[in-house]
Image 1: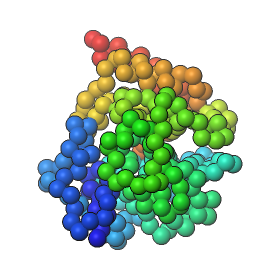
Image 2 (image 1 turned 90 degrees about the vertical axis):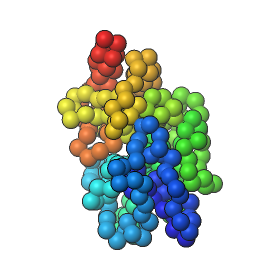
Image 3 (image 1 turned 60 degrees about the vertical axis):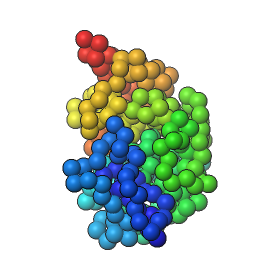
Image 4 (image 1 turned 45 degrees about the vertical axis):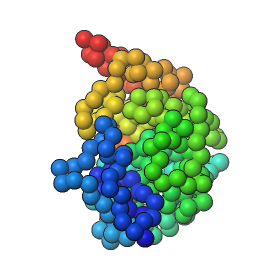
Length: 268
């Protein structure tokens, strides 16, 4: 049996003799099934054609992403802290080189994922590193591969250790989560945002969408709530979901200004 992986979104399903008929993550209005129909791959097939590339983004923060780009094409982030390492977001590919690099960097104490589009192969990663996966309970219904490693938290925030805090900011999904790292940017703070707020090509700004591929915007009241969720936290940098999508200066100001701009235009 193989744990089949959706080629469009990268979500991995429980081992089976045949792939599911559909991927519910892609059938949702926020995602899509490509014009060629539902397609599947397997972990072995993916390892034969792809690898994970690494970058050091700042001291104690590494980016890793699958090459050539696969599915949505997001990167994950490995954050090293005195209390243990955190894998932020996840990838469909877990190969031998990645396991050796992660082990050499101190392993993984917790996996935290921003939203269901990046759940990918979280169960394989959790089992490989004996790490719990922290997901917001509001997105529980989107889990397609249940496992004892999954831990569901609720409420507006959950602190992990060393001041690291998970922030619920409903919008893209009800359980949409960002991670605040107070020691980032030389102690000025960093926000690991996934695409709950999306760092756009003009990296002085971020965007807010219910669906990025289908261009479904969020209403003003929801964006106001996202801004309010992060406003109490200090952060100089915002690390987005994709390579080279970072706000490097005045990250908190960029998020709050972007929210005001969005609310102005969406309200006419």
